[in-house]
Every structure is written in C-alpha cells, then in structure tokens.
Image 1 (cartoon, rainbow, N blue to C red):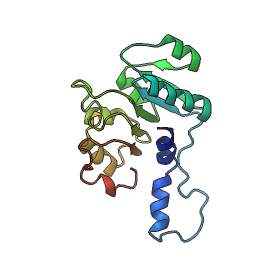
Image 2 (spheres, rainbow, N blue to C red; image 1 turned 60 degrees about the horizontal axis):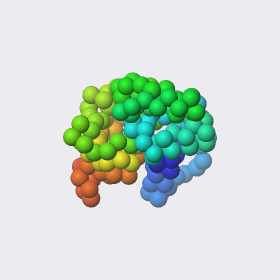
Image 3 (cartoon, rainbow, N blue to C red; image 1 turned 45 degrees about the vertical axis):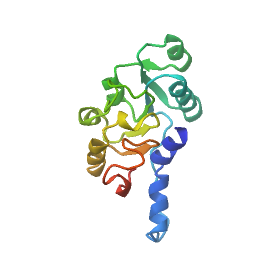
Image 4 (cartoon, rainbow, N blue to C red; image 1 turned 135 degrees about the vertical axis):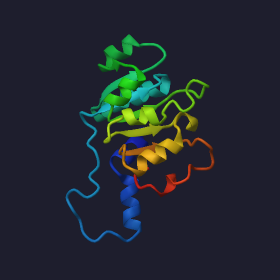
Length: 173
C-alpha cells in the first residue's frame, strides 16, 4: 500500500510511460514533480491490522497526518499517532490520500460511489488494496477522465481479472 501511495503521488507510472513512449526531450524542474507527502493528510477507511500499519508507516515515515474511519473508534491509536476519528464522508473531504482497508460486505459494496468521489478534493488520490468492488469502478473511471480527483492506485479490481473499460488508458492510474 505504501508503495502504491508513493507511485501514484510521485507519478512514477505516468513518467515511466512518458519516457517509454519517446516523449522525453529535456529535463524540466517541475516535470512529473508529484505531490509532497510530508504534511499531507492520509485518510484510512478501515483500521484493521493493515490499515493501522499503513497509517503508522505514513505518519512516522512520511510525515503524514492521519484521519480514519472504522466500525469502532480506537483511542489508543489516536493517542499514539495523533490521529483523528471521523465519519467516512469527513475522511473523504479532508484527506489528500485515501487508503481503503475494509472487507467486501453488502454494506461496503460500492462504498466509494459517485457521491463519495464528489466529496474528495480534486487533488486527492485514492488507493484500494482491499477488495475491488469497494469502489464503483465505472464512476471512478468517469471521475479520473475529467480529473475530478488526481488519481488512483489499484491493487484489486471490481471484476478481476477484467479492468473497467477505459481504466488502463488513463495516465492518472
């Protein structure tokens, strides 16, 4: 998950495709600069073992502030990392990077839908390493095409092994 956060926020896949396509002509100081993570906010949705570990690495290793949502509040986690518990909608509105760590249940299927994507900052990134169907990929593709959000890093897909139409063609994925 941390590797995916770094890859999408630092535009690694995009710059690799750019070079391989023969588009590179000369260095530029702002070319594929990406987002600085130190001081940014990581939103964790699902604070199980993996979500808590990602939060700890991001906080201590990358200097990110942590906000989270889970079925239950974890005051010790909040104390240890200075994290803040919020509703899912508030996490989406607040975070610069959203990392999903929830199980696929009837109530989490398409948890991230068009309405919730619209809550996110236009500069935000979403990372899904939980289950593909947590995100409505059709809505995600539509949002990414118009740059409604900055990008997505996906380790799982809604209809594996198939990708949602248009997903593989986007530079911000």
